[in-house]
Length: 214
Image (cartoon, rainbow, N blue to C red):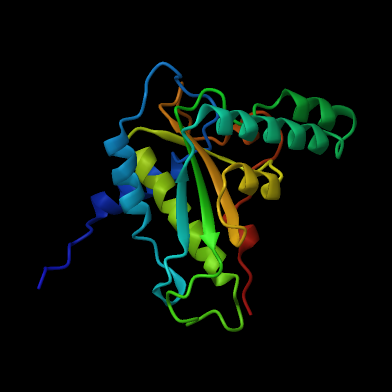
């Protein structure tokens, strides 16, 4: 039997530091590719995520075809233009100035779907909360994100899409639900502070404000 590892205080501090420096990256060095072997290793790490009933519902789609990428970018641009209409005044000006995706620069495009029709896991744990399948896929996304950061890569989660159109453009089954679209590459710069906080869109709240006791 393998001896369980000991995660000492130094490791715990490093883990907290990794989480603090895991930022949503939107600016990538377009001149430096990411080795396929590294991407594969990160996906193996992501697949260690917990999943309801051991269902492992995540489906990873590497979008490499230039034509498909172009349709993904066009989808984002349409959805982003529509989203701008939700704001007015100074907030609209600020929104329009934000760089919300690195789709054109990122060497790796990774779409993560949840296979909501999977029979794996035999339905355990999702009879009353079927959304646990989606949450399981989200855990895989976060695992990938942390592993990428530990390897020096940056990842950006793009959520401004028309999901149905993106699903069609990537030619995946209709019953797969889009969970995340990640841009992955070597970051131009690295920051511990969220960009939306630096630019004044929203501030980070203290944890004490988010804890409720009953």
